[in-house]
Length: 278
Length: 315
Image (cartoon, rainbow over all chains, first blue to last red; front, side, top):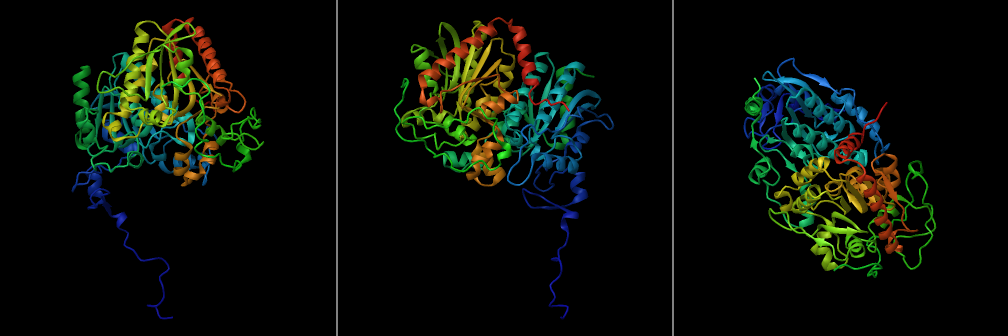
């Protein structure tokens, strides 16, 4: 057989993903290293890409200051849940392996521009950042640590909502996290919620929305019900800006939209102002 | 508007119960209700004399003749003093709030209001509240704190309303605020899940000191249909999803998420609404009597400990 009639074993393809980031919003190509240097923000349209929990912590915590707490609290499978395809226990174990974190949030103590804080960051790669029992317990421990240390709590959210594989146990994490944060706030301590893309469902309807300050990154998806669900319920098309951080700011649910490159400095400045921290 | 007792069936249950047996007998429910004898003259939820599946429970929880908030109110206190409005933008009829006398006990009652006639159903948005409803509920619950009254909440909703205005006015914020505020509210709170406990829309008035649940009510993080369409990629797999979600009272009691199951008449509350309404009343009164003995500061501490323990597993 002539070489030109023989089909290649695998389709030929230039592996652009290794070199370029393709913006999900505007489709612009940016060299990977340049994209990373720009904090995963598209230099063309300004879309803020998703950060992993560790990347978010590296962005906000002073170098070497982060000490993880509640690392031993990991996802449980209270229902021995099994869907059409797979068992939840197996899926979560694989996710843990892949992401290198035990739950959809990483929490710990840190300094943020030298201010002692308790810092948490959700990771969308971990089951869509969903709120499981381990996530709830980690948040509760973060809030209680902040209460003990009398320092501010900063939580960065990135989540599709409650984790349905944990059933009602997951729903109750909404009440649990809100209760923990309310106690913190009742003692005069500061809680800042930083919403990043996406913050929806049960997470938006719990600890993400009860900050003393609710901050969000630009063009972040924030909302309770899914766009499709709303469109089928009310039988009309929703405007494109619906459920973006800009939309929420306009409707009075955010204090401020802060670009990623300014986030650390903004948090430091605001915490200093409110708490007179050095 | 309030139809008392024995409402007349206008049509059979919306959805016929699926005839499919549970996919995995391994995940079977822990016994208790193997009695699916056909209740007289009620063809809807009951089916052949087979074991009662989770999907049957879902049908009973949604049964058109199941007692609704309007029926409980009509029986307990026909003179109930309904209070309106969130003092911000609107009064949401899908959420009832008011001052109610239950068996001589003065309580603040809030709850999801579903309708029975088509007009009522539309007016009450099928029991799906807007942010205004959650904010009204919180406002009226604050009265209980101020005047040292117990709070009773009746939970029966498929979920918070997914609408454009609801989002624009902060559905997420309204629910989140209720969760935070109810967790420290200085009043005894008795929650009764009477029908459908649908996700965040249910939880928005369901943080309390005693969580009671009618035997055939359901309480879930997501509807079986929603779960099936995401995880099974097929809404018709709802019976399987319902099974997997363990949304029945016996499972939730085992998981430590509810405190008490109120038994229902054979086949479900729709078979003897008056009896169910009375049983719920007695269960509420008992819970209130117990809670009143606890100093309110201690109550709030216990409430925190209760929710903090949910989803804490040792191993």
